[in-house]
Image 1 (cartoon, helix red, strand yellow):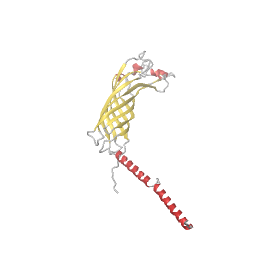
Image 2: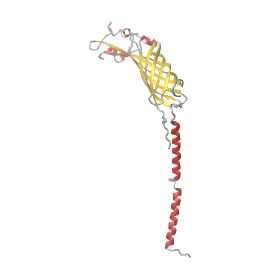
Image 3: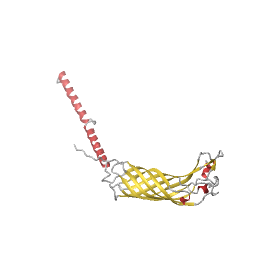
Image 4: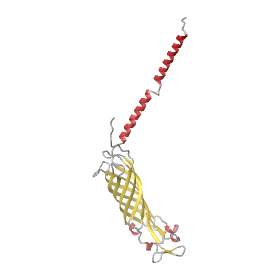
Length: 284
């Protein structure tokens, strides 16, 4: 039998321990393989960002757009019986594709103070001077306003002509939606019970119905995020009916169908959400 000294046993145990440490180091998943994986992921992310950051000035891009607008509208058709020029203010959202198609929606609130035929409308409750006797027995004046809203879903095409970049140009839109309008009546001191609550519904001429229309104008997506707007001429037609069960001036329910038209000019400011590419390039 071969004898092994204590020194030899200690040396053998040390060599075995070194081999075990070497094996552990070589098979540790937290070392080189993980570093290579992180490097590959970082390269893929950098490539994705570089593809997303396309410049507006030389490439057609896709982007979500949030927008607010103001419009000045002239009524025609049956609208002219009670209303004159009105304004709208509203907002919405759209999606512009990299093929320059535009799809989205908007909601605009109608307001104006050009209300016609007030004497005929309120003849049952006003004096010949157009005043009303309020709940305190005092003569008070009335103010009439146009109110309403237009809900539209639109789709259209941007034609890149006369434009500073491929994302701007002539815009042609078509839309469908819903339109509603009515007369808001206010007394000077708010003390006239004849035009409050359910009584007001008999005078407000609330109408609503399906609408369709279109817009033609110019779409500008600037090379920066600051200057982005749409300017269009618009037309909207509404097939409306009375939404009230009784009309005091008619002494009956209004069962007629109406053709309500709006012609106007709209100015829209947009906020795009695309990721803009840097203008400078750095070399190391």
